[in-house]
Amino acid sequence: MRIKHHPILDFPEKPKVTFFFEGQPLEGYEGEPIAAALHAAGIRVLRYSPELHRPRGFFCAIGNCSSCLMEVDGVPNVRVCMEKLRAGMQVRRQRGKGDIRATH
Amino acid sequence: MERVISVRHTDVLVIGGGPAGLNAAMAAVDCGAEVTLVDSADRLGGQLVKQTHKFFGSKREHAGTRGIEIAATLAEKVGSHPRIRTMLRSEALGYYPDGVVALEQDEKWIKIKPKRLVVATGASEKFLAFPNNDLPGIYGAGAVQTLMNVYGVVPGKRVVMVGAGNIGLIVSYQLRQAGVEVAAVVEAMPQIGGYAVHASKIRRLGIPILVSHSVKEAIGREQLEKVVVWKLDQNWQGIPGTEIEFEADVLCLAVGLSPTVDLLWQAGCRMAYVPELGGHVPWYDENQRTSVETIYVAGDAAGVEEASSAMLTGRIAGLSAAMSLGLGGDGAAQLEVARKELAALRAGPAGEKIRAGLAKLRGSGVVAC
Image 1 (cartoon, rainbow over the protein chains, first blue to last red):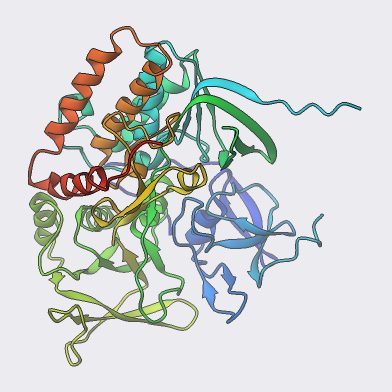
Image 2 (cartoon, rainbow over the protein chains, first blue to last red; image 1 turned 90 degrees about the vertical axis):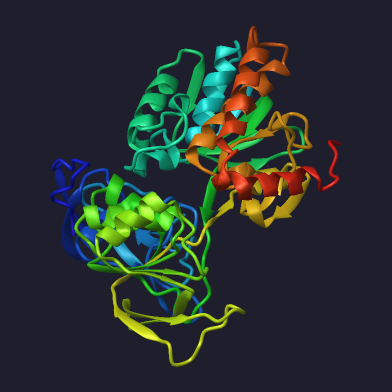
């Protein structure tokens, strides 16, 4: 959910873009981290862990902890707390460690 | 064919554009050094950009001003300075034995060989062990601040905060400002660690602060649904029968920070484990110089403290680094002023922990190599 009223901060509306989460269209602000757009849409499960397949969300929000790795436009292990949202992005929950060979 | 590997040169390379790094860069450039400042984010300011509360301390360290405003002022000064080369979206990946720092910027490799290096990489959130601590909905306090105060998105509807230090108290207040309910603040210590002024604000909002309590477990299927806390005995063990269950979709951990010192380990700096400073820190002298004489450390990477002191240790590191290159003008006088201000800032009861930590570090018998 986005903050509408805040006693100190202003969050002006920004240009919206459409992106895809698990194939479904969603809207977010262009240039915000993908994780912020997903949170605003109420999506907090970002991947499943490699061994026990446990759901994981984001934890540190500044690119340090690797909890928020997702598959973006076919590329695995993208830190979505850092990666900026662009129109048309295909964002998917990562299952396991991701396959680098598939992208290079 | 000749393969040319270009290495950039700079007088002082500052890694980290938070309060410490920005001040280090300004201090060094004011001494006449040519400075390169790198940061992994796409804007300067580090974690200051999410601090919406007003700062304490001295006027020179921006007391009475909100962190976001301090960040904007400093970032503007540094970012527009003709002799500071600012590199954003640049992650320092490694320090090599020949003194080269490798960076990645926009998927390109860059190598920089500085005459002096200031490491101002800050700190990262500590974690807490309890069943299901990996459920989505469990965040570091810094992450909640970033999400709310930088991106304008709330983490959920109802929060349990762990930690009644300043960060836990301030973030609880900020959650309320953003319209999020805070069910309780839980603190393992028998007393509140943060300043009374912050604790009072929380209590006036009717949020209970439960001391001698910790998390027993998190409950949820795909994401957090409930948090169970329990009372701790004198040996920090949970007491069965004292459990309290909170419906909550957010559990926020404000249980301290660890200095981010990977580059310093890699550079071979002598390290010491000092709990009062947040964990492993490099040994350093009063000029913030580590045991590797071309490397300086400032801010939380030198020991977790506050933004006000980070600005001062940054200034000291920047001045010292430039002066060691024979630059400086009135650097010595400025250094004296900064050292005095830092000592004053650490003088009160709130500075007790850092003073004890520094005494331990300095007394660790480590000498410059």
